[in-house]
Length: 468
Image (cartoon, rainbow, N blue to C red; front, side):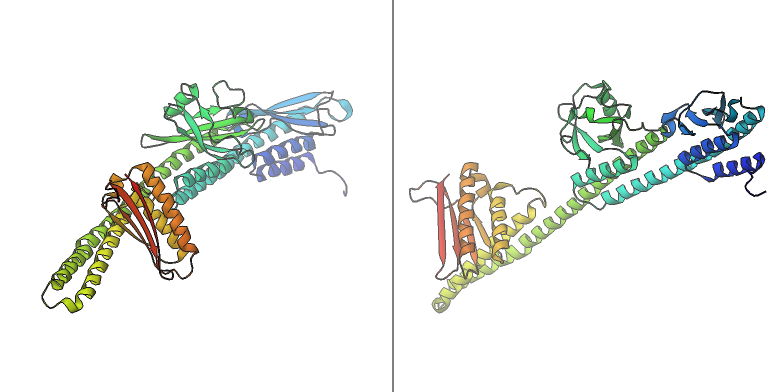
């Protein structure tokens, strides 16, 4: 008959189907509570869990006219999942004020059994989905680390990806300090970035001893746990601190704190995060090794080029210069003596420039240049970028060994001023820089001479010298 409620067996079947249809754990629990109200007509239904932290649940899921238990008869039915207690259904306030019937209890117990099966399936589904996300995240981190060059970028990648996977307030990387503590070197904390990097864990901390020993640390509340000693601990609640360790080598620690009041990490989340940290540590080691191999290949290639330049180019140029000098000294060579002299000087200049190029190839491909020679070359390279053509640089004598640092600093200041003046002049198409430590000063003292020449107009020469 139209408008009549469906018989209880039919409604029970529909409720069971609804409960089993949702693979989301929270949705499954809500269907259970709603079904209990529908089947018994209770004024209020609540579901409590034995271990809220395991599934990250807030405990009670309730439905009813008042939203809270009221006076009246009560009925409680336990829910087990795979033979273990999960929680219980609580009903309060049957229509008419009477007690719950035996049939009500039987219906509710049947619903609890089906609910246990559905909760078990939802747990498996949620665990599989979480595992898939963490595996994909670990793969993405590995791919990113093996294609990046900068160590700081690699740590930031690990911290940010882990923060997103763990739904944490921050992703933090700590590394050991020379004093025996640990310091936060990288932090991915978009909501609270200030003051995190640089925070330290003092030597001797109980947490530190565990981390340095390769043991993970799980904290329920960072703000109140006496083991936590950083000055930013009061900002956070539940946290995981996971060693980044591969092949017996401790790279650092990955910390994933949540906000105060946020839910605690579940056992599944702890396990997956620990596995992620192990894989990320291995990826960091592999990325570092790959980067080292690439740098070694660059060194070897540059060394080969430098050897070729020295063994082939310089020696041939030197031999050609000797041959021209010999020709210049022959009888009857007076008519072409000036030409030969200029050719010899040009060859000498070329040899100096090739030797400078050899020195530049022998410098590390990254990092600041070392020695006066390298610092001068850095200045000439910067000037070349402004001028639009290479700047020639020649060195005579052991400039790196003979020129002390204070004198070298003053020379570089004079060089910058001279090159800046050259860049401001019109018509400059060639600039030559020469540093000489073999020619004595006018008072016969040992000294260093800096000469900067350009070809603007009649040519401009800047000369600077200083005693050693």
